[in-house]
Length: 250
Image: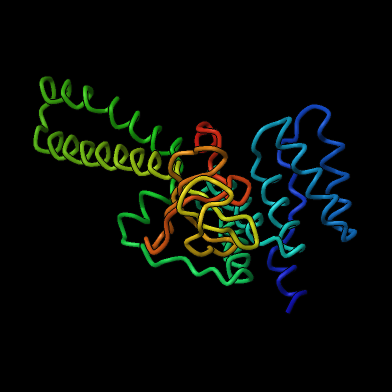
């Protein structure tokens, strides 16, 4: 079963575009992974991300390394971060599901058709769709005044407005995802106030997705996805999916 998971994870030696002097680091990290030296590989991938910024191929391989170490929260985090750059990538979605299954994390079924549509495309994709629709609107107006097939022009303009509205909704949905966090500690303690000696409200397991609130005194206010838990969690026990606002649009 373990071998099947490794095969399905399909550690892809897709360097993509690894820039500057990180190319050798990437090759060495891949070699470490293939040799079963997963902690060394993960450390190298992290170094590349720090110097070159987010890359889908590096985040994918980082997540695979953490998966092999049973660091499920960090594996899920890496795959989720990669998905902010390439939301519909089937390999990333499959890898994420494997990591969630290994962590016994089962996402809530939130998926209406519209929610799925809005969240499965990146902010960059929706920005381009909104720009294209906005450019076509004045062209439709000109065609209305100077053209003859006004019925078809009106239908086209109405469809363009619908596309523009959906694109704007997609951008809004993307902005609300900036507060998503993943529990990376094996078990995170949820406290009633942002202090180490504060009473706890229980714990939340590794790999769980939470909504992040404000940060105070080295603690984040978190709310579980189902709303059953909320409180303060030490900042090293949770990580934001999109720590850099530019991640989803690069």
